[in-house]
Image (cartoon, rainbow, N blue to C red):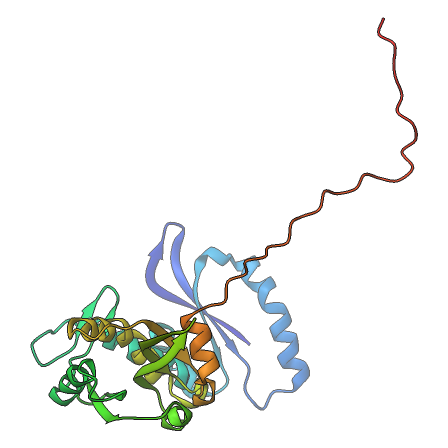
Amino acid sequence: CYILFRLDTKNPLGYDWLLISWTPDSASVRFKMLYASTKATLKNEFGTSHIKDELHATTMDEVTYAGYTKHIEALIAPAPLTMREEELKEIRETETHVDINTNTRQQTLSGVAFPITESATQAIRDMAKNSYNYLQFKIEFAEEKIHLVKAANVDLSNLKNEVPEDSARYHLYNFKHTHEGDYTESIVFIYSMPGYNCSIKERMLYSSCKAPFLETIQNLELHVSKKLEVDSGSELTEEFLQDELHPKKNLHRPLFAKPKGPPNRGAKRLTKPN
């Protein structure tokens, strides 16, 4: 059945009404479909503007005042979030946090600036003095700090083995090579992110902290020649680094040929002016 219950609130046309559709679980499918198909007609005949809310009930508890209160609370409450949406919400709340002091991160226009540890700072200074050719860093989420993971001298052939396959990292590598006969040393910043093996929060934080961390590196007088992003350590070959640092230039650009006219246009016609 349908139940029309008058509320205490009013609109410009009169009192507001609550329309209750009562279809108990014991009702046959035929009756359920019949009532569902005639509901729109009833609303039009009664006056849609008078109906403030609708309630579909299948049990007696839902037709009580407590049941209606739960119905209102469900309408007001935010929609349930998936795990992915919960992570994104947490990241947004973290990024808009503005309680700044010397021990916490700072939010800038270019990203989120997490402080770096003393060991990380010293390692960057040591690399500027050629003490190491490779540094690796990670973000400690609980501390909101960037930590040094490794400082060593790594051969280029083994560089790919330093990149984790299940977590993001920042790397600094001094790529020593020759270009056009000249010996060159280039500091390369590498942001490794192994695709969807990492959580959304990890991907977002590493992406947001990258620019401020690079600024910190530059302030420590270590010049970065190239910034790279890779999914896997297998990408870090000598050929790849050479191509990124010294892109090949196409010196022989093809000239566009003049388009040919349509065939069989016939002889030119001369017209005699009047």
